[in-house]
Length: 289
Image 1 (cartoon, rainbow, N blue to C red):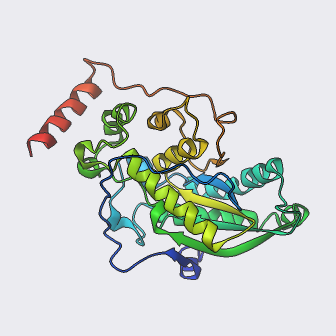
Image 2 (cartoon, rainbow, N blue to C red):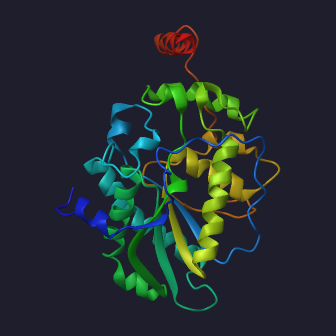
Image 3 (spheres, helix red, strand yellow):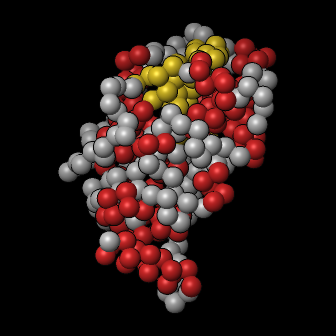
């Protein structure tokens, strides 16, 4: 990690933090939120954090207590992924059309307060600073302040938090049939959509004619892209089929699924395998506790 990397966190601005927010409770919702407004004044891009120490350890890292700490930050590979995302981001902006209303547009990074997301935002900013000429050619004004947004935190996985990542496979299939389920005390898909809506509406209030990069986590971003697409032919609960790789950036497409990647359906462990038996045992043990 480059020298001074962590120290620059002190330059971040807390965008949406209220008293006693963390540890935050998980909202219990009974329905999906309304669709996002059709005519947003900003362009939005979704950036997943780079490889983290939790990714390497293959554990779920979702506790709200991790916010504004250094726990489960990036590996050196993750930092390079975040830095490389800068070029991919500029490609997305160029393809979209950089100028909003034919004027110079601000490019702003808005991050989850989890270490792996904050550090990815910093790495992306490092990368962007190496492309000043291209930024100028795209008629962009790079904002070097990173805004922290509490509602971009990782999806909370309840009793599965800190467990092996294969236990995702025992929650995700349920999402396809019930967007409000909270099995294992997990945060529901609908609750995440409510958070995303709050993020976008707050951004619309604070910014105008900007390119906003939301730096967050796989489930949050995958849910966000399908919720924003708002297409009746795709169930938001199928988000796990539209995986973000570490350090991957995509435009948040409004009302369209045309440019989404091809879905890759989730594959649960085969029955009878050691992985399946271990998962079944772990889940049964937690249910009895």
